[in-house]
Image (cartoon, rainbow, N blue to C red; front, side, top):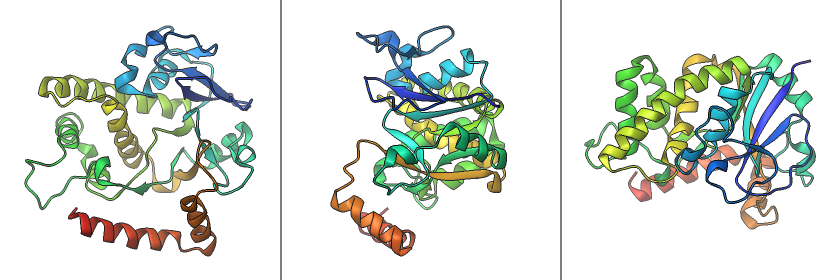
Length: 274
């Protein structure tokens, strides 16, 4: 039976839920004043001190370089998990189990969060506008990809110029896929970090944000569409009695959430001039 290790990135104490196959990892441990008592990301080959810029990716880097005994690997957050039923009251029972992960990865190559519509602060590029004044972070990423791996540009266009992206840096896959993606992504982010610092556009968490695009781009380029499974993500800290949550739940049950969302975001972009 394949060993499953799903990294659960956390910077504070949290309810670990006791789920088989989930490994809590203290991110930014090299900078932390407190040892949280579970796996740290500053052991062995690591970039723990880069956590303010790389976010949960310091856990991914640690696992890529140091965790060799797992056949299935993944990354989630202390408050965000892949779920089989986003709207159930018993959300703890709907978080993917290790057995469910094994079963899914016999059919699919990778599991990613369902794409969502981007808001202006997420960043979008436009072909019909002057490049000057557009999102410099995405433009820099575009320049790096064009130079280093131009074969990925169709996938970059799909997500950087498109309206939807899978956010969260969350994934489930085999160790081979996990390592292949990490080996491609981290060198790109390292150059992005260096050039961004030179240009004076580097802000906290930016590399972690750019990698959300890179994960979509890598998967789209390397994995056939029918081998990518998009799943809902449950936020364990979300107010599940709020009006917004209950409205989404109703629209999903009626089967009209997606068309309503499309219309709503189209109007939003039009009003914002995006």
